Length: 102
Picture 1 (spheres, helix red, strand yellow):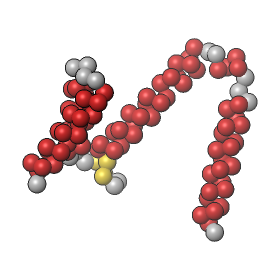
Picture 2 (tube, one colour):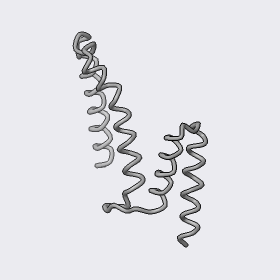
Picture 3 (cartoon, helix red, strand yellow):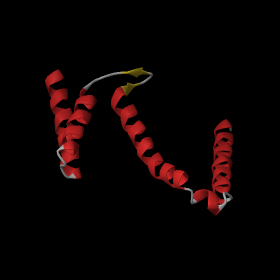
């Protein structure tokens, strides 16, 4: 029963946030700072997700093959490789490090 209560509270909270967003005056949304922040929030959220997935193991930080793959992807990005090549490089390096590690 408590799971359904959590689902109902979460749904109500999401609806409330959506309603709050719709009630913001348009003049406030047209400010340059707000527009710049709205453009950067998804980038920051994605970067945080990548960092969490690459360096977290449970409740501790770890450096393993995922970090090597991420570093290889960063190098490929710096070399302006196409997106699919960046992904392929990251996968290949991660797999190679895991294979060499044992």
